Every structure is written in structure tokens, then in C-alpha cells.
Length: 108
Image (cartoon, rainbow, N blue to C red; front, side, top):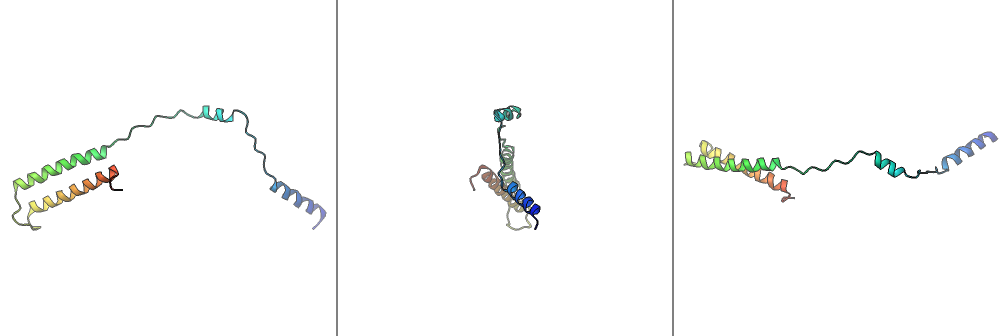
């Protein structure tokens, strides 16, 4: 290795090992803060999904009462249409209850 290559290697090593000098000008933070757009106020959260679930629960209970009064289930079999409809309404009601409880954070 020649003398000039050693000098170049030493200069490169010194340049790479030197820490950069960081200088933040005075008033930099104030200038940045004034250039930022104004914050928009946070909107209140809406609960349209839960409200729809409560309305559907009421409608399902009303449908179950109507099905029970219009055609009583004499036989508990899948061939009886009123029994099948009541079981489907019960399943939907249970799923809606589960959804609303999870949305309110009670089942975490």
C-alpha cells in the first residue's frame, strides 16, 4: 500500500468516525408549530350500530311473539315451520345480544 493510499484511508476513516454537528436555530420549534394546520376538534363517537341492534332485538321479540300466537308449535320438529322460525329468531336475538355486549366492552 502506498503512502498516498494510507493517507486517503486515514482521511476516510477519520471522516466516517467524526460525529456530525447538529445545530438547531433559535425559534425553530415556534416556526414549525405556527406552520402546522390547526387541529380539528374530535367528533363524538356515534353508536348507530348498537342502536340498530337494539331496534332489531325489539323487532325479533315482537316477531317471536307473533309467530307463537299465530301458529303454536304442537310438534318440536324441523318440519314445523313455526318452530323453525322461532329458533331462527332466537339465534338471531342471541347473536345481537352478543354483539351489543362486545360493543359495550362487557365481554372483554
